[in-house]
Image (cartoon, rainbow, N blue to C red; front, side):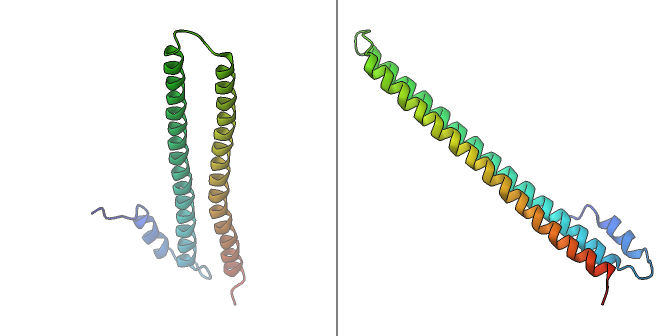
Length: 138
């Protein structure tokens, strides 16, 4: 089992020991911790999306190669006679499939960007509220 260590523990302790009148260092440190968590979450979402896109690209390549192989075997079985109608249909289907695959990949990329940005935007909004509270204590 892996135990997580705080790489900023010494810095955090040093900042907590640093006393400035009217400045709540623990609030500032907590705010920065939340910022780092938001960045980590955004990176996680982006990484998972990259993995999903790589998997999708692998599936596309596998399906395409299988289609080419199937067509080549079908043509080889026809004693070398190439049916222009079958060729045209294969090209049409391949083109439509390629367009659909590109659309799927673009949508995956768009969604991952929206999700990552939403995490950062939410944290930025929270951060602004924290700053307002620090500057205007009740």
